Image (cartoon, rainbow, N blue to C red):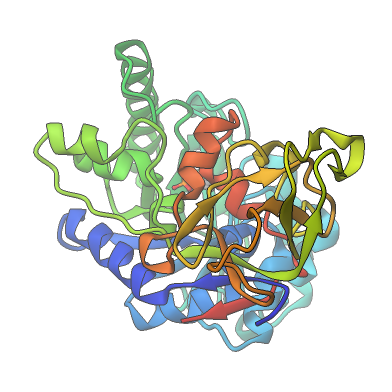
Amino acid sequence: MRRTQAEIYLENFRNNINQIKKQLKPGVKTCVAVKANAYGHGAVRISRECKELGVDFLAVAAVSEAEELRNNGVDLPILALSICSPAEIPELVKNKTIPLVCDAEFITLLDHILDSYTPEELENYHENKGRFTVHLAVDTGMGRIGCFPENALELAKLISGSKHLVLGGMCTHFAVSDSTQEFDREYTDRQFERFNFAVDSVKNAGINPGIRHCCASAALVDHPQWQMDMVRPGIIAYGYYADQINREYLASKGIEFNLKPVMALVSAVCAVRPFDKGMSVSYGHTWTAQKDTEIAVITAGYGDGLLRRFAPFIKASINSKEYTISGRICMDQCMIEIGKNNPDVKRWDKVVLFGPEESGALCDAQYLADKTGTISYEILTGITSRVPRVYL
Ligand SMILES: *Cc1c(COP(=O)(O)O)cnc(C)c1O
């Protein structure tokens, strides 16, 4: 038993990818988001699994993430979702990564820099021989990256008139597609219309828009008619629903969609210590023994991603029994009152902090997210690099 590890239930990941595939119209490609270390699950192993499962594309944020995948033999097409800087262009080329572009300055600079490569060197997508593929991002209302819909045609022309580039796709991203509120749904409808306007303007000018994609996790299940040529699921692949587009909501629409959490955060009891009535635990002494008792010291803390604000809510599972954390979570440890002569807790026992049912966990990341005012994404991504990922 290691001090703390993230156990990755690959069988659940496979279940989730298959659940996603069942939602797709024939011919729709999948681009699984493996950014931020595959939402904390380990990007290399998850990417390999994606390949086995017939996923078509991987999405990263930074070029450095693409580099890690390429260095580990991952050969699927990779899309980089964040804007990359001019300094990163050589890495983009070296790692055969498809960037999102959204402005004339970058497109022109990119085409110019590509002059110093051979056609073989700059090819980053097998379908576009000898050319460098880019996807044009359109901002239809997310307010993040992308050109405005009315500028899409001008940029598509710049790309198709360039020496080395080819427009391999067009995409947009929804801001409130994970909400079931009527007001938000209407906003998402408008975004989809604006995206279609941009795509049509390009098409009508005789330019192939390439792979059109707009749906992340929420929209691909809630708006199947918008899947276009490709979808970009992230969180659902890791077993959590996209906010309000949850199991109950989908079931009410007659959509059966059963996800299973993939990660369990597991730690260990490193000591069992007697505590007299009146002795206090941890920084700030926020917890004091009300009677003679025993404390189990657990080797997980916020340095592992077990955030301080989880303390009142964690339902730690030791040998299937539920325990709460006593006092503040430290960087590397936390403490649990187990009571005197507890036959169920021994030194070196396993402690499951959150995860899927089959891990023995008594709560999952969604529960902790709801209790602490965040989303499951942040909790999973927050599991730090010192926590070994163990694949089951
Ligand atoms: C992260 C991201 C996704 C995946 O989002 P989920 O909500 O996790 O499905 C898709 N597209 C873009 C542009 C993203 O940044």
